[in-house]
Amino acid sequence: MSNIPIKRALLSVSDKSGLAELGRLLAARGVELVSTGGTAKALRDAGLEVKDVSDLTGFPEMMDGRVKTLHPMVHGGLLAVRDNPEHVAAMEQQAIGAIDLVVVNLYPFEATVMRGAERPDIIENIDIGGPSMVRSAAKNHAFVTIVTDPADYAGLASELDSQDGATSLDFRKKMAAKAFGATAAYDAMISQWFAFADQGQLFPDMLAINGAAPTELRYGENPHQKAALYTPVGPHARGIAQAEQVQGKDLSYNNYNDADAALELCAEFAGGDPAVVIVKHANPCGVAQRGSLLEAWEEALACDSVSAFGGIVAVNAPLDGVTAEAICQIFTEVVIAPAVSDEARAAFAKKKNLRLLVTGDLPDPRRGGLSVKPITGGLLVQSRDNGAIGKADLTVVTRREPTEQELKDCLFAWTIARHVKSNAIVYAKDSVTAGIGAGQMNRRDSSRIAAMKASEAAEKYGWGASRAVGSSVASDAFFPFADGLLAAAEAGATAIIQPGGSMRDDEVIKAADDAGLAMVFTGMRHFRH
Image (cartoon, rainbow, N blue to C red; front, side, top):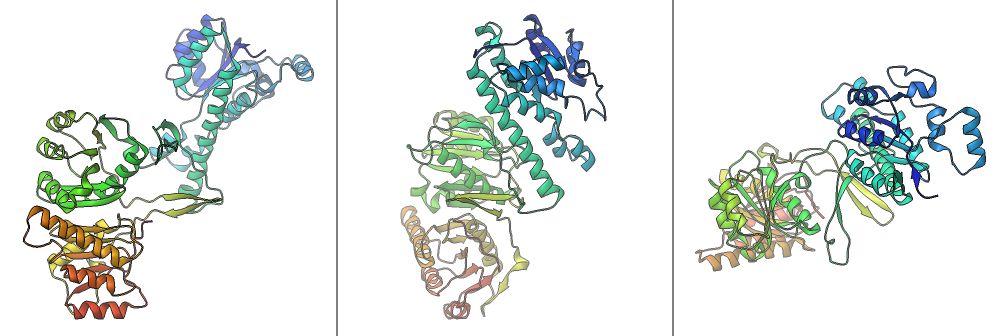
């Protein structure tokens, strides 16, 4: 028989939202309610008749509630195969009653960690009995219904209505799959805390990765691919996945990827002068800092207005109406801001397909964590590239020292370069990108492409000269040959920032000296593949 009537339910929940309503619904159908501790009290407070688990097991709850449901009278009632004569005989011999429905959600381990609790409190919030009941019920889903999420109470109610007080096998299978996912995520979260927070391990022996609440996307990177967005279970940084979408079509896989790149770069300027970042295909194509967002937008757009078409825009300050109106002058896929004024919202509302995301605080670009990349047969795992350098970390390697403005532009260009796909070259002048070369197989070509974009911008806007003239240039890795540096010099750059460390550093330094350039080494590389 695939439909199993619900006659007895065991309820034990930490999250008591919807509990009273569910209890009333079950009681109205004549379901016997069995419960534990605080759950039993909440049901009684709602005026419901409840049997304590201790009455079922013959043993009191003990050891501060650590031991209450770990008993054959509970797990026998959950695990018995009811069409197996030996199981049925054992139940009759031991007076074990069947349990048809289990409603369990687990101790709030994540919330305990997030509020900064001490270690003993965190350990006490590792649920043992709950996951055991969940797994027992889920394993025996042929006969037992398991519900682990209050969001599924309504679905359970609908199922009971449509199946005359029973549940179908399809429903039980669906709930069992979700239950095993819940316990797996819970265990993963605990193992992560033990490994990373408690033991200080960077690469634990077993790496547990989890995600929850998937949002299925229209398609993946290409239309023939499937895609979904998961968010981590456990402590994590807030970002694009948690942003409020004010308007526009659903975000696609590529939108999420590009928007994340834009937000990560924009976060570098948190708390600084107004900054605008324009990203296309996960690469910045224009970045500027100015006295106002409108000025920053105009300068960032001028860097590469061709690539900006259909791009992603992120800003580091509350977005005003005037800037929003300016952004609306070109086709933009997504706009991201920590806050948005009413005037800006009204301006964007005229562009119904434009996605507007409000993030609140920007993420910390120096936060820790791991990045994970699947490869055939394995996972590549590394710590996040959160390294940073300041003025004091630079080493001048040329005869000419950079001016204060050149140093400022070097550091600005370096900030951008760390977010550009390798090989990366960024020309910058007066806190504005003049040209960006990304993702080339050699550094010379990246240098030339960036210079070409700067020349095209000068021609389009009628400037007297390319903004690469008098600019500072950042390279995400060392120049293996002098050719990339010479291409920058030909474009008019006057200062270079790069990691150094090439076998040909002396040759590159000599070329810089011969060209009259100032050059500084960072000692830190920022490949982004």
